[in-house]
Image 1 (spheres, rainbow, N blue to C red):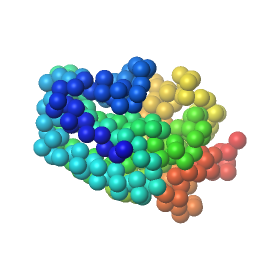
Image 2 (image 1 turned 90 degrees about the vertical axis):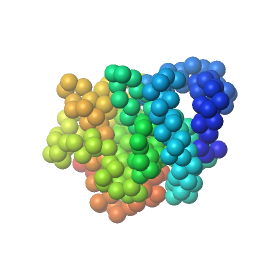
Image 3 (image 1 turned 120 degrees about the vertical axis):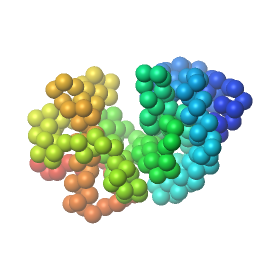
Image 4 (image 1 turned 135 degrees about the horizontal axis):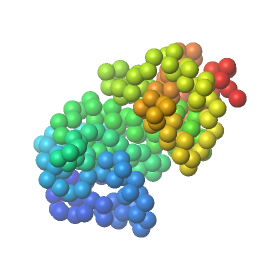
Length: 250
């Protein structure tokens, strides 16, 4: 399906949320709740301003070119990609974000996002969807999530450059990460996504630095790359357990 022309929806005054459910033939509102948590905007003045800038920049056309490039690079699935203004308010500045599922990808874009930033955002989220298609069932644990996030950022580094890595993946020293793996993450590699601790260790708590899970995942993948000399496409369908050094495998 590629890039859905959500710009036409906005121009014609449709409810974005209703159109998403209609296109995907869904009645369950849980998807919308998840999207709102991840950046879906209401149709307010700020989102209209962002949309106007996106339209001037012809981001939908650029996104379609990016989709075709990475569908080929990852041998990825032909899923709908929803490009939409990011949520903002008088209290909150819009920022780029995204959320990926096995059968669809959503990209939330702030005003003034340059094409390389859009590409980096796309690479990260579409990599998730491609991995979910190739390796179903491997991403239900904390370890699976850590490796999936690390692989997505490694793909950003390979295709867009280190300058486009998310800041949190390199926010901790290697020694800090090694200590966290040994004392905190390794004993909890098998916890499920449904458990609260999964989110705490991925995003951080008072005891764990903010976004530490992303830093841990990136380092595990980066070290694996250094050992095995593999690229993004070669690693895309490898099970998460493969990325652990022998000393941390259970």
